[in-house]
Length: 342
Image 1 (tube, rainbow, N blue to C red):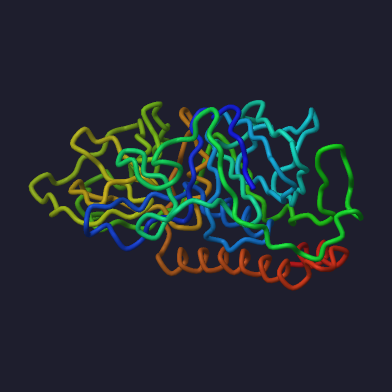
Image 2 (tube, helix red, strand yellow):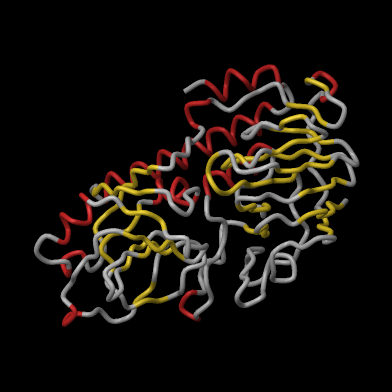
């Protein structure tokens, strides 16, 4: 059971939820940029939420499926098609043997996630299949996918779904159920991102805190999976009170001496010494992960208890849909109402 990579796209890598528990040794966490989309893609094909997916950036790959299988595409829209038919995001799709999926261009967001039923059969490195490009470990030979690569798949867990009853097309069929539109993210070029105060929030004296929240920042074209470099009114802080280097979290916003904030993302370093003014809340990291060069961001400060509540609600929503699909996959006529029932 394999998938052929006919074209690699701009940056396509194998990622899961990350390499936890090793930052104290200088090993980066890595993992998907948009956990919400990756988790949902896996749920839609019957995988566990932490299974590895293909993360595609801006220009997607061309994939040939060498056997019948079930897939889901989530996250930003990169214009997926199969034999000239557009493929919907956030949907369960059964693709037939020899089907070829292409991505024709970015429509919204920045990153698309492709999950395959059963999962991608590659070894874990330090408990994760995530690609760490700089160290050349994990994923597919520790690098982005390339032309003529072939991905092996684990056996699909067959569900008792009557695919013959679904909407048929020459190379694929679509499941008859849909994810409620209310829980599908919308990706705009102007983002409002919620944050909590960082460890060194009080280092930013005078009007600097007000400046940070009133200013609109733009994402620089030098940004990548390691961090988003922002441009806007520079910030000042008490340079006599530089903190000791400490562990860096996903979404921490540090401010180097030039005063331009940097948001640390999935491939962030393990420790850092620049002061952290705020940290993006976990519930908003998926939206931030879909931002691209030139997009604008305005930040809003909230309390940590509210941030925790928002994240718990998001995880409960994912778990609820996962439970519905596990319980009712054998009767697709019941799933639509259940998934849409909020």
